[in-house]
Image (tube, rainbow, N blue to C red; front, side):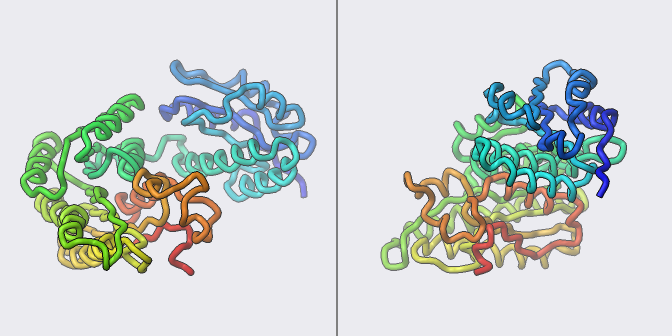
Length: 387
């Protein structure tokens, strides 16, 4: 079959588009040997041809017949925030996927671990940027001008959601009871060019919910999205946990979610609707040994979400729950050992989930793309509950 390479001009245009996306680093990478497909024979022309915006670091790594040595010489394989632009045989996700997978097999014996990891990350990043562009080359911000309130945003899932939502154009309000981690998230957002309203917040307090809503109403006049993310865990079993600890778990996980939904509903109704996303867990779907109260609270979150979805549907307020599996967060990592996470071998997927995996699920439920989705559970667990 005859190969149809992407023109040099089109590659340069794509890189110029990426330069407008506030990315700190752009890495132009080819995974295709020029002997196999003459795709990056023009690598030097590309490097010289695209516009260099101020404040962006550009890095060109040529992983072709000459490129392994050059790539290693850069010493920048693990730079955070790198976006890779992949030249495929044809500019399509299908062909890019096939090209990378075939090339991975060829690279197994050439410092395979380093290169393979980089390829996988780059492919995910390529899919992301491919989806973010319209034909005209403008970044498609899926939450443009929406107002999003995210609790528990000091770390883990809440932090990932806050960063992603801001990237997609939302006005983000972040809260957490831990002021140190809360303001660390705010600083991270500011460093990336995003603004955020940060408020210390105990989600079990009705008074503090009222204070948060007053501040949001004063600054924005509306709330389009609420993510009830704040929560705690207790791993004690039925015979061990005390009534006091059982009730405290419900105070945060169940009562906090209830108060969030109740507090945000009036302002959502006033602005014509919205999306409420309650973070439950796979332990709100299935049982396990231990964590008795955690199971109880997360099961309650699931059914509260369904009941609220029915109650609020006539007001165009959607309510859904997300059920993460084992995700690399401070809460989950607290039981990890030097040998790794004890639940890793119970997951069909070969990797433990990242906070961003859940954040993208929340992005879908927060966006207008899911306008007919309410009362549902979105399970993001690497296949754990499919067994």
